[in-house]
Length: 459
Ligand code: DHB
Image (cartoon, rainbow, N blue to C red; front, side, top):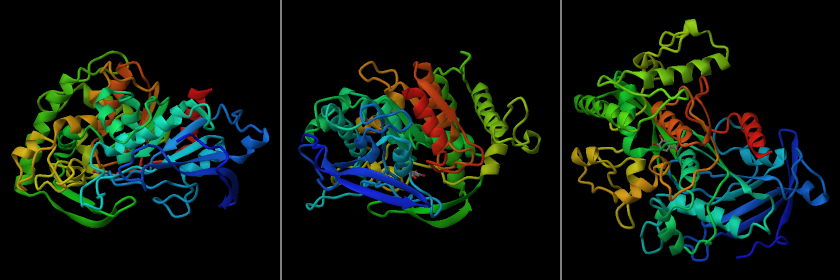
């Protein structure tokens, strides 16, 4: 299990006129006792110039930050990725691995188990918390081989989008927490550390126990939904088919009940803005927390030189009409958005166990269940929510966290990332949080800015 620096191939690729030469150390097992040996592997990529005494952006083979993106979408399994074209987004878009190498980072790509996987005996092998356990185990491999692997293991930066963004935020907040120890021991991960330096999180689909109430707090006034229905596919992000309609009477009632739960949750977090003023909501869901989102969206509009006078739901002082905002970006999901009362959402599938594919993960949906579905082990549900670990002394938090949640993202409420950012900031982490104007549910769309941020914090 020692890193072998002799076991590599040199690759050269040219994409859109950009040529990259790199060393690929492929398919390295990162645990001693894998549950799924095909997946618990990683590849390391290194700019070839580092082996010829050259530096890139003033980094060298020993000092280069280690960029460690995960390819997880929809909490599905993710295979090892290679520098090349992006698997999703506009055709012809080059992926983050290519540009990161081009920029001088060492890149590590782990394969990660996901919720749909089964072993030969028909048992599920990638239900929660497997995705996070694997990501941690891969980082532990790097630390255990710190003196052998290329790059600076004190500068590991995770990156991911959506479910992958959630994983990146969890990597930043659950470092070395004992909750994960039995799972890491089971697969015989290295007994080193899963410490990372920084995390980049695009539109994290997280805080799943409270995501339904946050969604209805934001979208309660929007009776029409339109979405692409997620279809499960193995080995990549899910595919989608179009679907739209009006909320039923039952769904509308659920929306009202969920919306009413959100202010209490939010108020009990005792969050503050950067001036130390409390972020609160009254029983109608109005208050200083809305102003905090308004300021975030105002800054976003200004960054893109959008004429604020042309936005009916926002004014120059940052006053936000949350209903007008929700109406503009439209509703994607029906209530409850995540813990479906039929018990068959992607998140229900995430919290299944070895023999049961889907479970509820909120008492609300469990009590309203029409699917006869069990409640998940709440200790496991906790393990996929960064909010529970930020104040926990048994975990450390990464020093730097960058969160981006597109202004037009409707996959989860803007409140979810806003709460995460505020809580992290309050705990003393260096947080860079923005809601880029006009951006939908996506990631890796601003790699130049992301790499500027990495360079700034690393040098
Ligand atoms: C993803 C998107 C969702 O809307 C969701 O509920 C879970 C995951 C994703 O793209 O990863």
